[in-house]
Length: 194
Image (tube, rainbow, N blue to C red; front, side, top):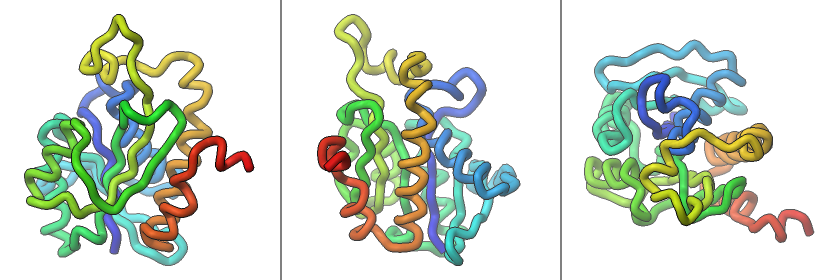
């Protein structure tokens, strides 16, 4: 079994914000598979199991604030007896332009509070992460405020295409593994056009 965890903040106040793109995509993955999610109080997460081309995948969205994400992720791995190689975290990334995605097998938090919490809780950086670009804030808005703002109209219009690419990347990771998925999805927009 594989585990895909979409990071975000709980509650309707944050549901349409840039920082919640991970949780949004996890829920979209469940929706497209017609999966019924349930709250698992032991892991403090919304969870459901789906099948992707015969592979069993547990999809989760922690029901805690972003900077506490590590606790639920660790609990999910322990409860389902999964290793770090079975884990993919989906989160937002300020350093990628809006519409770009990047999947990696390991790395630092890059200043992302959710990833920092996961790294601290697991005691390792060796887990997959799918970073979804939300772009840098305008000069008059600080990063902490920017990530908690809703998407602009232009971004909302682009969100379905971005979502489909990100979910296709998740499906590829579950079935084909991270190395092949990186080759398929870690290209620049210019490379994708050629």
